[in-house]
Length: 156
Image (cartoon, rainbow, N blue to C red; front, side):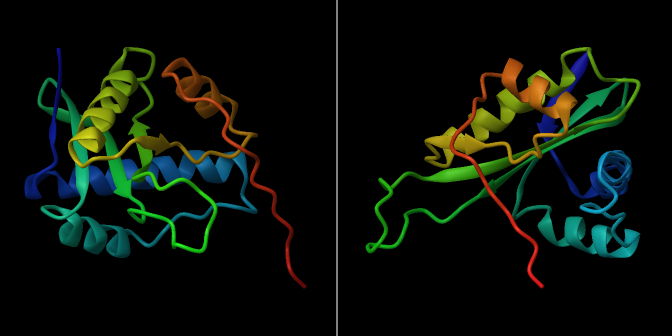
């Protein structure tokens, strides 16, 4: 059975493991875009984030096998912008290989939506690269859909 709960200080080591595993997957997808972050920097981030950030974990048989982080964005666009004010958040989900396809990611996303709504968020974003077919499929199955197009161009 999967238990979804808020992350606590005792989860820092597992959160670091999840972040690094996620980085490894992303580096395999696009080594020109992604990197493996410094483990100690990741540890410091989570040590400082616990209690402040909106992080939930998925636990199976006492082992943390997934996480979701809700990152609140600016409450309202500046007055000079044309966007309708909406409280928004980014959602970042990770499930370890070997535990995918069991509904853990879906449970984490549902928890992220609940946590976001409790913070007056009206829209959540899953920022993924179009070439990440697995993530596109996963978030699409969770009800996420396209919202605009983000174009980029290297400088220099």
